[in-house]
Each structure stands twice: as structure tokens, then as C-alpha cells.
Amino acid sequence: MVSSISAKKRALMPSGALRRSLRAHGHHLSPIVQIGKGGVSAGVLKQVEQALGDHELVKVRVDADSPEDRFAAADALGAHPGVNVVQVVGRAILVYKRHPHKPRYEGRHAEKAAAGKRQSRSRAK
Image 1 (spheres, one colour):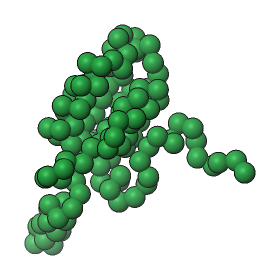
Image 2 (cartoon, one colour):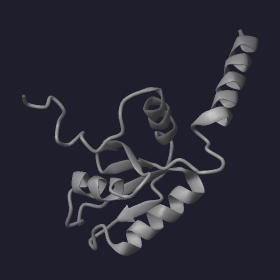
Image 3 (cartoon, one colour):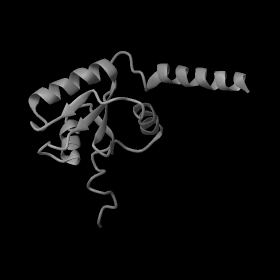
């Protein structure tokens, strides 16, 4: 039986409410890390790990002069433990790694923030 999942989408995290939420939050982010003509090197991977530790959700830009295409770069970034590729759009890759102590987008903190937004919307009506 042939898999119906595109080879380009196999590295993306499973669809669901979390992925949808991360895509919405990532839309307004600016790229923090850029992959240039050196490709996905050890330095780039170290920068991505540091940025994920600080922000949890990071947008990475793949420059036109990069030797790897955007899907190969996404596979390389998603190969690290705990790192999920949320979305690949154009030359931008949205990467997520849950913070071990204070997750911003999952768990109780995210539920409280969402509940607060719902209350403020109902008050505005």
C-alpha cells in the first residue's frame, strides 16, 4: 500500500490544535536564525538550539544561496530530539521545542491565556 502522505510533509508534526495554534503564533514572528551559503552547519544548529531554549517557537529563514533546499534543511532541524517542524512556507521554517519547565504554548499556562482571551472577548461584546 502506498502512503498518502507527501514526502515533503513527513517531517512535520502531526496536525491538531497545537500545530494550528503554533502556526498562528508563528505568523507574526521574524526570522531569528538564517541558513546561508554554509548550509545547516554545527553553528547554525547551536544557534537554533539556543533560540528554541529562549523562545520555544522560532522562525528560520533559508537563504537563496544555501546549498540545501528548504525541505532538507527542515529535515536536518527536525532530526534533533524534541524539535518539531511545524510548517515550511516559502523559505521560512517554523520550528518548535517545548520548554521543559515553563511551556508557553502547551499545558496550563496556554489554557489560562486562552481562557483569558475568551473572557475579554465576551466582555467586549
